[in-house]
Amino acid sequence: MTTLSAGTPSSRRWISGMVISSVGLVTGLAHVDHLLEDTHTVPVVSSILFPLYLSVGLLYAGYWLGKSDYRGEQAVSIAVWSVVGAVVLTLSGAVVLAADILLHQHAVPVTDGRRAIIVLPSSVTEGTAIGFAYGLYAAWNDRQTAETE
Image (cartoon, rainbow, N blue to C red; front, side):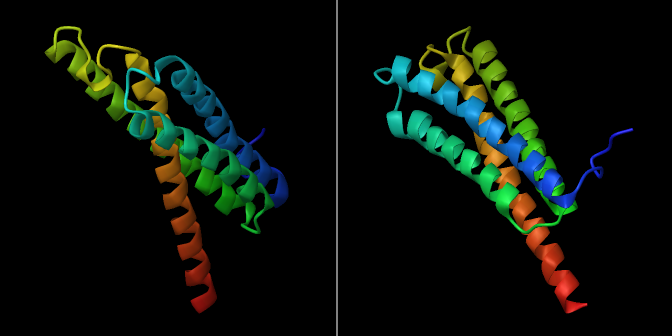
């Protein structure tokens, strides 16, 4: 039976890093598509470039986590927090998008009625970045606590 705690610390770090980098890659591709198709219809910096840069940052963050000296369980915890952040922000983005569509009679003011679905990859990207930051903080805090004991 395979569990999250199975494997060497190095393999758990790399698998955790690949999870985070995969999110960055997939959302980055969605943002590049958005950049190529919708640059003339939406604010470029806030709705395209910022999420795209976060996606690139997630690609690097996954690589960095794999190369880091965090213990395997700490790396898994960072990846779990990243996924939790992605899920929570994506659900809230979906609720906002659905409410926007229902309240404004199928016109989506957030995206000017075009490519409304881009709200979801942006939510995934931002949630993963927030979860990664929190996971890093939690792992750092664990290290500090262990050093003082």
